[in-house]
Amino acid sequence: MIREIAANLLRALVGTLRSRAALLAENALLRQQIIVLRRAAPHPRFKARDRLAISAVTKVFPSLVAAVAVVRPETLLRWHRSLWKLLWRRRSRRPVGRPPADADTRALIRRMWKENPRWGEDVIAGELAKLGHHVSPRTVAKYRPANLPRGRGQKWSTFIRNRLAQTWAADWFTIVTLRFQVFYAFVILDLGRREVVRLGVTPSPSAQYAAQSFVEAVCDRDDQAPRFLIHDRDSIYGVDFRRRVKGFGTRCLVTPPRAPQANAFCERVIGTLRRDCLDNLIILDDRHAERILREYVRYYHGRPHRGLRMQAPAGSRWLPPARPVAAKAVCSRPVLGGLHHEYSIAA
Image 1 (spheres, helix red, strand yellow):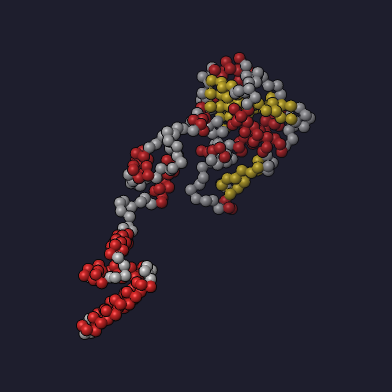
Image 2: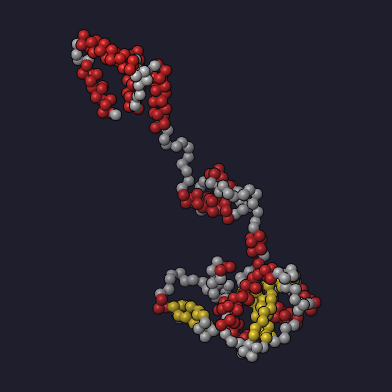
């Protein structure tokens, strides 16, 4: 298209060098041909390059508007406006205003919106400034997730998690021996770190045994008694048990009838004790059962836990090293005769 326009302009410049009589004759001939074309095709079809060429020439030489006989003046003005819009569209390609935030900052803003239901754009902008991302609160509001509900509050999981550190749970489960004797195991669980604070086995369960187990568990934790103790509606948690528990300032929370999911944390630990330990061994007597369970609980406290984001219940004792350990420097210790293994760094 540019070549054709340049060729036409070159022909026009060459034509200026000819005589005036020749130019007048050529113009008369061209006009006569246009008249004939208008009779044969009243509405000729113009291409984009034709419109651009006519508009550009008439823009540069306004005196030649009278020489345009193919189209009407209104059409020529419309072509001028279209050319003007095209020029401004090319000039306005670059967006105006502040540059957008980078992808890393946008991802961090959306993450803070989702993780903090009580925060607003001002608080998030302040937290971002602490991390070296200096953005305006309006920018933070701009990148707020669209599906985030207004007036959000804390979730039930958050509400419960904030009170797990001061809550224990207790429950009984049965153990069948080689001679088909039934023993009863009593477990007390710290819900904050999923740590088994007490585990005992007895052939004759009673309220005195359960209360004494709770007292020993509190004494082993340096008299740090929990605020709440969750248990079911078994008759073994009677007046004597509640009286001794209340003496430590602990309030008993009784689960609804036939609702084991109300004590879900303790039920899950009992299921782990069965699947990983008791279901793979044959128990001889109560001493054997208690020794096996204590050995497994020692291993359980150093095992990664899903509820703790794959951290061990006794996490402070199992801090990872600063650098990865070579394979030859890792030693293993069999647990329960090789049923499980515990790995550590060789001395």
